[in-house]
Amino acid sequence: MQNPRLAAVYAKSLADLAEEKGQFEQVYQDMEYLKALCAASRDLVLLLKSPVVYADKKQGILTAITKGNINDLTAAFNTLLIRKGREGYLPEIAVAFIHLYNERNSIHQVKVTTAEPLSEALRKRIEEKLKKDAGFEHIKMDTEVNQDIIGGFILEYNNNLIDASILRDLQDVKRQFQRNDYIQDIR
Image 1 (cartoon, one colour):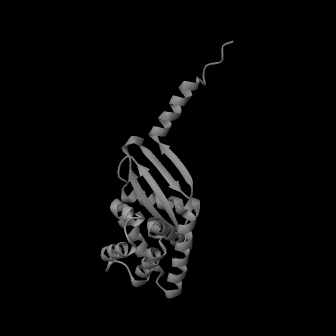
Image 2 (tube, rainbow, N blue to C red):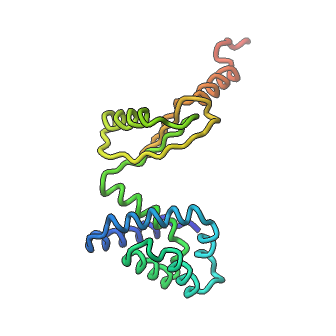
């Protein structure tokens, strides 16, 4: 039931209205909160997508969960989504809004996967290197620990993937042995 086009349209509308009202930062924080809320509670997402639960029940539940945590503009937007029957797309809309916010503020989303937790000094070195080499102004870095990569790192940004992991090196060596690159063909 994913619909990125619909999510982008609603996110752009909300972003334009928030900028017009001078609440762009606040709505961004609200969308971060809603994204985290949806990621933490699969039941909430299933409730929002459920055709069996009436809209007034969904409105009451969403209001109770978010009361005091989001501003009035975001609450009114949520009400509009429920009234239009688009509440099931709230997680996608939140992600699209965050992407739009990052785009408008020249913030580049970077994901670094390492075998062990990244130290703060190394994190800063990676940020400086990206700012210098890729020309990024602002960087928002997410880190992930995956012991399966053995060592090294995997860096993802702007649809680019730099895989400098030990696991990748071992896979490359394995492929070379399987293809027998160093043995001439016997006729």
